[in-house]
Length: 78
Image 1 (cartoon, rainbow, N blue to C red):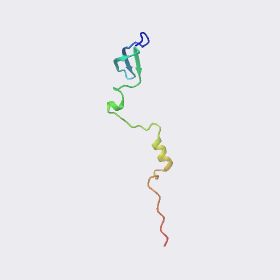
Image 2 (tube, rainbow, N blue to C red):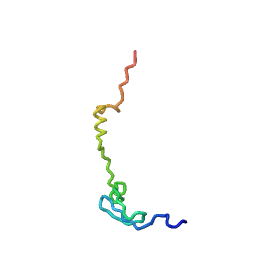
Image 3 (cartoon, rainbow, N blue to C red):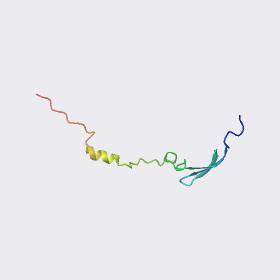
Image 4 (spheres, rainbow, N blue to C red):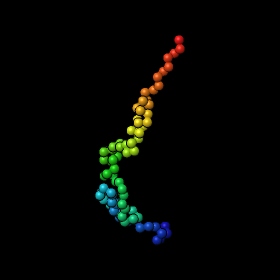
């Protein structure tokens, strides 16, 4: 290996947006992240499905809730 071409691998402090901090190793001495395993819904078990854009309400308003009921069959000619 060539000398003095690799970055230093130092102890790193990771700080999450929720306030959680932990130590690991990285080429940077400090990292700031938005979400970690303490606040991520997958790891906490508090997973919620939120319709933020109102897509379900928009769909039912557009089709009137009758979209999946199917069409009425025409009577057979006698």
